[in-house]
Length: 313
Image (cartoon, rainbow, N blue to C red; front, side):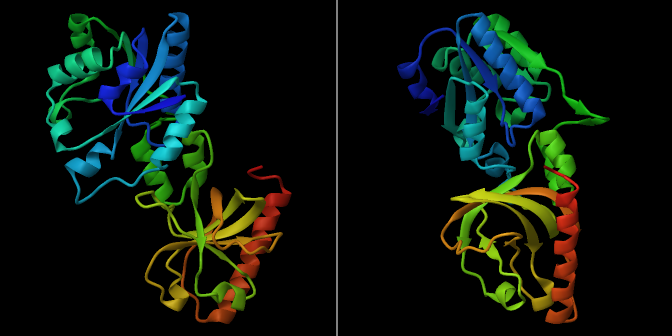
């Protein structure tokens, strides 16, 4: 996979037959994966290259800066996952108010056909484009007939009665339903970040924790205690992870504290990836350190029961 920064630079790298996937692809969930698989397969069948156009930052964060969406994964991880699915090129283009003002026809013709050179385009059922997002899949299909490319619109992927969608996955995560979110993502939701110094309170309670600094703009699962898998820099272990504000000690900032179950290492400055497997309980305030310690013992015991039963392996 090759990363191209800017639409204008793409044809300098490739100017042959091209199958292009369009979308935001936050989370690279099951629906996104079907779009990418289709894009790659069409490209292979037609001796063409496959590409994805990504806009950064998220368009809604530019159009509605007062309420930007929290991301499921970072752009770096999004690019990595798309590459792992077999895409040949990722075109990463900045999204700003000038780009947002591009009209439907200009985007369909000047951007997609002239500057990128798409011969075939694959989109999701809910894809929108152009000024105010007024362009629909059927609009793009009609533009394709005029500008000389084919458009394939993918139907939604459903789990039960629910359509797999990034917006719904965010709702699941914010309510702590990490197992349901994992089913739609195709992998457990995770947070990757550096371990930073905390107040050392966990060690005083007998349960040393690593405070993981979360990437800016990435969603946190709902406050509570979770069974997690942690890896990175020689670490591969089960853990008990608290997400929240530690109300027993009147802490104001939400953070992630990881207690490794079977090993104890100095983790400061290391990058860890915390995979959220199951929520164990809600976060709540305790009357004091003693009561909190007893509850953590119960949490650890329950986590070990889940592990011993083979849950989430």
